[in-house]
Length: 352
Image (cartoon, rainbow, N blue to C red; front, side, top):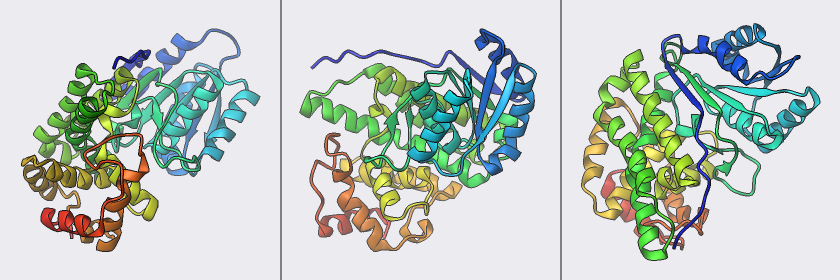
């Protein structure tokens, strides 16, 4: 079965120490008229961590409006989109971990203005993808939005992020070992479109995270650069595929199930990493043992206790995972798993 889709890629990806100072040239590149109006979408804490600096840099190019967001939900994103229209903004800059960037991508998509992604934490691959995770939709997973016009990742600033967020980024990348398998499976059994190049690009980002886990986990700028480039690579694989398929499979369904049952309790990348162990075990791929050793070594949770959730909640999450996106075929099939099967799998992997 063939599929036609448009490949839209970020025009610029600027990574490295001091990369944030390239923002002025980037904005001048976008600038087409006077007055030129810039919206900086950020949170309270992320404004202090990098949003204020972005605001100062942008003021040298045009009029700047800071739009602070608290929750990454549709209501907030619609409000930002409305403000972008009211203030006649020409560009939106999302500054933060994932929340502000997702809101900026959604609002930019709604309004039709370019979006610049300025990540302050490398916690997931949404910094470069055309998808946004927003609460308040009828779907507990990402919705398609706008591919960032540019990604500006200052490794010196990102290296200051809490270690847990850095580890979460590694966890999100490890999930690609599963998502690519699921994509191939759906192609084989359901005739779904499968793109080898996009799949290999996503897989490369996972292999990179696994290979360089130690230097990344240390949080030094060198490791942060490796992590950010791998996250961008994963985001680009989704742009090429035209869907989140290469980067999101059964491990993400499990993570989304946890997020539904225990909202805000676990970082996305932590849940994805744990889901990766489980799904690789179900596939019969011995790689799950190596990944588990690496996760233990760097401090990613490998058990319900370390995740801070009761074992029965993870059993339920695994049971309902196939029902999160019934149209997305994975190794879990389409029906809810029995409690007995879920318990056995989780015990075999040592999660409970």
